Image (cartoon, rainbow, N blue to C red; front, top):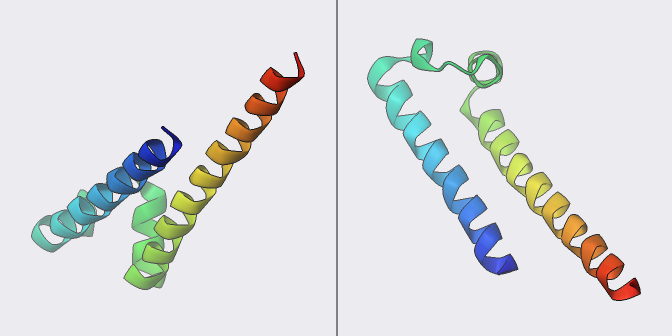
Amino acid sequence: MTAAAIGLLILAHVADYATFLVMVARDGLGAELNPIVATIHEDWGLALLTVAKFATVLLVAAVFLICLLYTSDAADDS
């Protein structure tokens, strides 16, 4: 189940990234409603936005695994 959850997380972020690229190519950066994403793209470009997206996936996956580890340990202690 853990691998499936992380796989879905990765798939969702890849789909979000792909739709962002298509939207910006078609409608321009003004179509992006997330001001953080728009600012990163405008000020630092697509390279930093890609790094930020990758870092976000790693952070969420790590938090998920840490929470899973702690809840498993808590269940074992009772």
